[in-house]
Image (tube, rainbow, N blue to C red):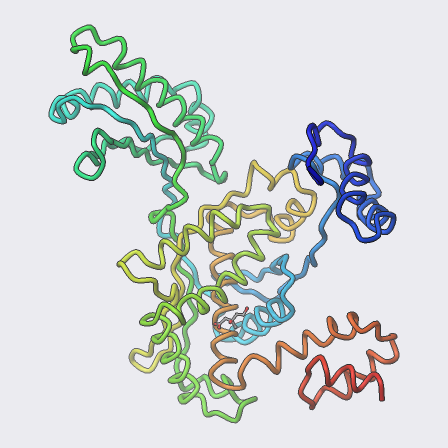
Length: 438
Ligand code: MEV
């Protein structure tokens, strides 16, 4: 069959590129040359990148940007962001600057507990399992002592182990839910290693109990894996200011401060009550969050999955942020789970993730949670402010103008002239093409 290959992973990188180009390119020579050309010039650095995944052909660059002036709890950060979307960094930077002389962002970590699960089947009397559980729990702690020593020395480890009975929903199904403190590491490998040890221990525990019947000795571990839903690993970030000091909030749109505040609060309430709007609203929050997560070598899929589950924790998907006025003070707040690490994983390996952490002053995981939440809030504030005043397209298309000019092959002179011309004109693909042709 065309396009099928055995042993692709065994080929050298050059052979892989050639095979892909020969089989899938319109112009194989051109594709092979381009894929080969995106390698890092320093072989040692490239080796690190190639080590991240199987079958790496080349690198896929994205811009590494900075949102300056992000003040969190009185400390000013230059926040590294990796994202392709034109207006995201500009929006975060503008919100950061706006709040800089109004106290900046405030943030607090509400908890750092991570979770893991062992899912197993057992068909004995549930009361007997409850009776055996204290002994099983102690055995689980003891059996993983060697794996948890380092983490315990750093102040973390296993916090608790619970047994949960799901037999009413699924015959014989129980779950061990363990909670962990993983200090400055995201802790996925640590947690998963401990959980797999738990799985073996559970099997051994039942298998070797001569006081149990044959049926009660029979346990079946289905799977052991961390849960990316961490509702107790949560951070809150907020901005606040007397409404009377917000006259500049939407001056660019000619809107008095209190009216702009009212429109922002209404927009956020809409995102709390309507899941269609909530999804887009939260997407805007994750524009900021994912970009810092990417820049610092953290796992953005885990963060997104968890954030969206948290957003529907009361049964309906809602906005992760809230905005209100109380006693004349406007408050815009974001609360979400962020299971982040600043040691281990890619944070130490990816050369630019290391740089990002350096730029942030090598923060602890807790500090990074607060920086990331503040950036998500900045992004959300900027998006909602634009939406309820000028709309987002004018700013977005101004930023996108460069992409259109590049796409149409504009020269530097044409691009400079276009930037001047489109400063007060609506940007569209056809308008830019017409401008370049004229
Ligand atoms: C675009 O990437 C993000 C926004 O749609 C977010 C929002 O609507 O709040 C502007």
